[in-house]
Image 1 (cartoon, one colour):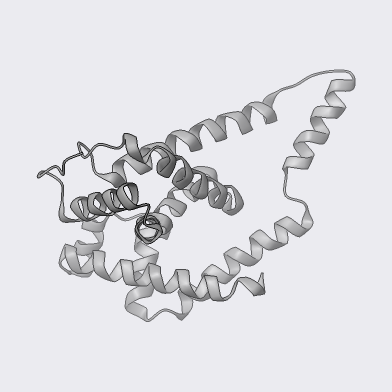
Image 2: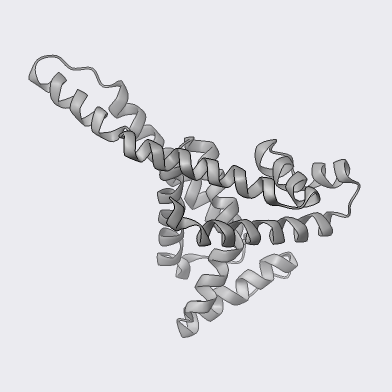
Length: 199
């Protein structure tokens, strides 16, 4: 596998990490790849499912599938493109199956069984409480960010601005926006991780 000169600097960085992971089984390389894309992948899954628990599971599944097939990756595309393709395809399958289960209508004893199955798949009061607490905690954490970083997170994840649109809105260079968003996400992740015992 040879590095593609057409890849961006980020793409080439990822490629070197992939080579490290495959050639030496370096766990730090895997962890670093996860660190670069975990948050953005989670938010993508959250937008597609609307469910924090499903989004968590699907994010982990996507990395699992990608790392299992890492030897199949070619530098023809950026790793991020390849990873997100795996994640979105997996998520689409998941959503379809969920919708199919919810739409299936039967009669007789099967109806009761299906109803119980669908009921079981819905969050119970305790699970719903955990979801609500996670969302509440995320909002609390975002509120604690410095105004500038808070604005960045809100534009990117709540208002779904592209990096370019954020750069225009805040009159900042594109590279600065990306670097500051990365720092904001790392801060958010660390605070959320430290506060897990609260939920």
